[in-house]
Image (cartoon, rainbow over all chains, first blue to last red; front, side, top):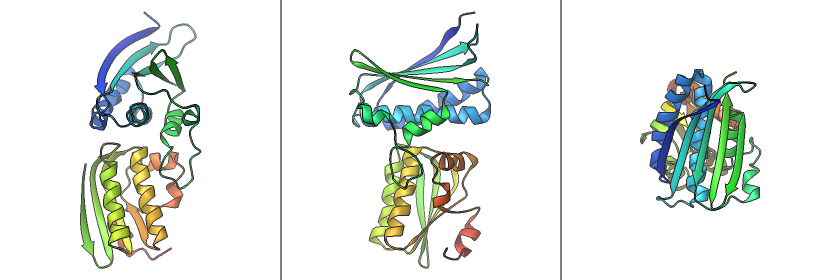
Length: 143
Length: 113
């Protein structure tokens, strides 16, 4: 059995209307892999926030920016725990380093929570820039 | 997502149905701020019983409603939070900043804090 198995690849455009579709896909997929209800919600929240960030920041609100989402099942071979790896790829603007720090929660402000939600919900959140593409890799293990 | 308003004496109750995300949170925000800043309604209550999902943009709309109401010494009250909505507010560490009740009756009868 391969250590990492591609289950699904989605091609989207950067329109906020797609978010409900993304949520509709990821939650049952996570459940089918073996995550419980609470973790399915966390994964859904993290992915929703990640796609929203791409729409708002990478594409500046433009509606036709391409976004690819890959879902890989981690099969837990060797020392790796089983789980789900989600990769978002976009061709938008490079994220500013300060934007990737996130803002501390708990203050009464109306922004800056998305990155915090992603990091609290997933076991790993890694941003990279490869050529002209942004890649966001998020991993959640089945504990 | 649908949002509708019921007007009682000195109170507006917003009934929100569906998911609040980046696609529709601007409409939610606009509805709250219009009622608070333009109509100067002293008490705005938000019914979230039919909201199954809310993300950070939805939380931001609630925060803006709360801030606007505080600026005008109005009240901004939530009721009927689902488990997932409550968890998202908890995750944002903003749960304790809001006035929250289980149902409409409690929200309407609650005295100012």
